[in-house]
Image 1: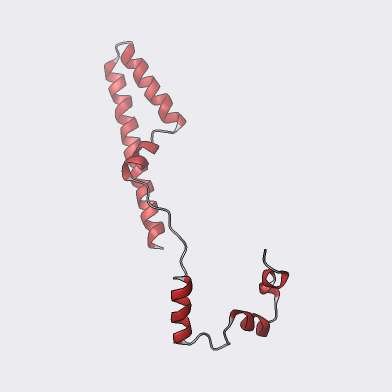
Image 2: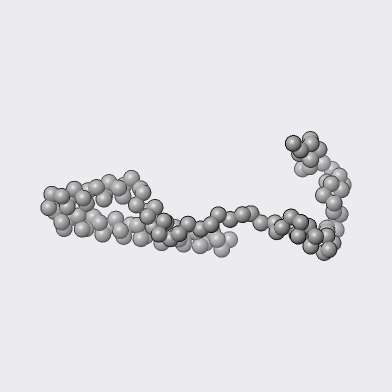
Length: 113
């Protein structure tokens, strides 16, 4: 467990904070920065691996309304109304494609930031 002083680094006076972090107001020397980079690695958050595109597309069918529409298409097909079943399925697939496209664009925009 860390000691209390280390946990309160944010509240410590500036000079004490600089001393504990081993730096000065001018910052680290290039050699010290290189050494710390080798010791601790780059200052980056770990990124989750991206989900495959096919999983994102399948996720579009997990909405309750979409499931109800698929059920309605199956029911329409079961009673012989093939035309309505096909139209409902076309709407469901179009909705999934549109949702996939929007999600893909949003993730691309977020990744660009």
